[in-house]
Length: 339
Image (cartoon, rainbow, N blue to C red):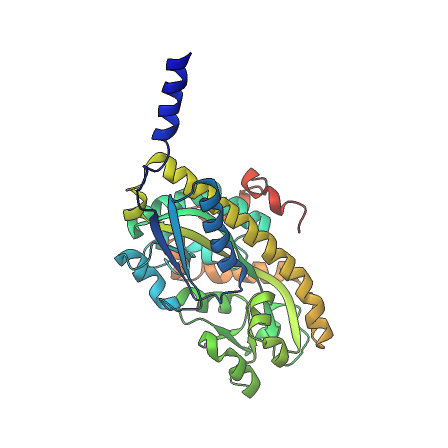
């Protein structure tokens, strides 16, 4: 019995960080402000690791672009400047263009479907492509927000034809600009920090940010109407540098994945709560919410993508596989009954 206990003790000790070993430092950086749920989720991830496996990992958090700006996140991951960050299909579009369908309007139906897709088989395949082509290992996809069309001045909007000529702010990339056109609008490249002034002066007529992001930028002060298009379930994929991942042992990888799941579930729940609670804040500010013919918007988007050069490089059948994926991924239990 004594020898058995000694043997078990040796096995347990072998599974933990060697005494005196330095923690593995992972720097996370991104543009989100310090009080955003995605930043709080990473801080929670660090706290969880410290409680479950003291001194194995040290997560350093650099929010609000203090270490790298948005455009520098991907290069910094790939050069070793940082080890952890959120990316999405738009960020890596040039390196994995075959997964461009993940950037399309109405590619997924709702947050639960997004979670089921990107944390399921298709997400695993996307992750393999990220690892092979971009040197990034995904730890799970989480919600950034639900994109709707928000108008500077209210108008009747029921179909894409009603957005003809509307100057709608979209980021400058080809994928984002195409998404704006797929809604019937005239996409207008505008820097993130310039949206408020551009709406205020009429340089743009609309934007398509999620409600929590719009609130954070105070865009409800220069907005009359939110058209509930729900055209894109904006996702974030937490990734770790492959160079770092390959140096971890199996236990360390398991710990990091477990903590990433805790962070993902926290962020998803907080984002969904904000989506619901902030609607009343917007309504109190005098903003009108209207419901268009979503089926008409989805059909128009499908035709625009089908006719575009951008979509010709997509994996054959991927768009249909996205549509056919059921919303029943057990990794997404926390979003069930939340729609």
